[in-house]
Amino acid sequence: MKLVAMRFDGVVWHHNPRRITFESEENVRVLAGVQPPEVVQQSGRKNVVIEGEGELYGADCLEQFDRLLSLFRRGREGALSLPGFKPVMAVFESLTLLAQPSPDVLTYRFRFREVRGQATDKPQSVVTQGETLWDISYRFGLTIDALVRLNPQVKRPDMVAEGTVIALC
Image (cartoon, rainbow, N blue to C red; front, side):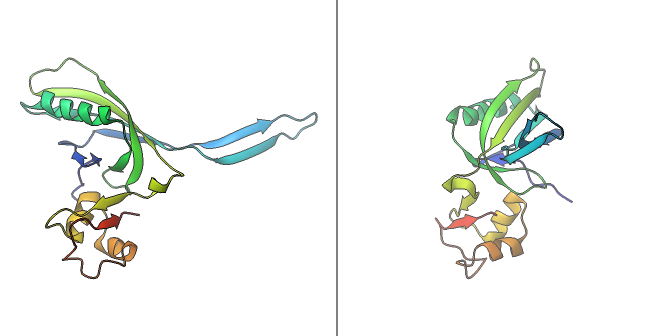
């Protein structure tokens, strides 16, 4: 199985991170009563935190890191696509250079935080010139059947008008 490259807000990672973690938690409050048992209140889940580490390789590894740093500095939410997972709307929360660059290798760490509960809750892609649903399915690691089901407005997956908004989940 070939993994799709990690991407955020239209920028593709040259090399997938070697480690990715997802932290999911519930908002839970324990109320201690005068007598046992305790009362546990759940008030929904917290936004998922996605962290990882990786290396950038090649003679242009510093330029690759600069592109990621520029993406981080944009400070806006976007669709985050990770190998093997459904895209989510997220913000780029941190980017850290972990070691002094050595010839052709740079080690870094990143953190994204899921964005939920807003109008932009559903990740989307806007079709560019010449793009088809197959291109989008490959780019985001989704099946063509899923994209067709999510986008009934698209009559032909091989002919999609430029500027069409495609739902990703």
